Length: 69
Image: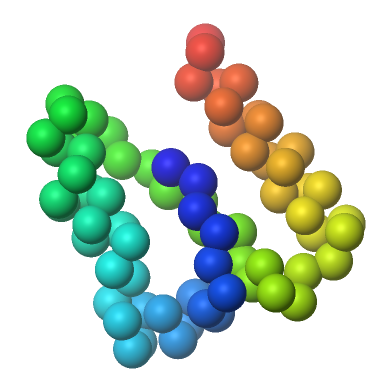
């Protein structure tokens, strides 16, 4: 799973407890037969540079390609 976020990781964990991880891993994916949940979060989007976004896209492509092996 690939997500984007504008919340820094430490704040999301301390204040919200990573709600997207809980939703996907506990409430959605098990019901469609997905047991192996891996998630990458690209953050923070608002202050990201063109170079950072290009790097995220490269990483996303690598992750997607790895699923096809």
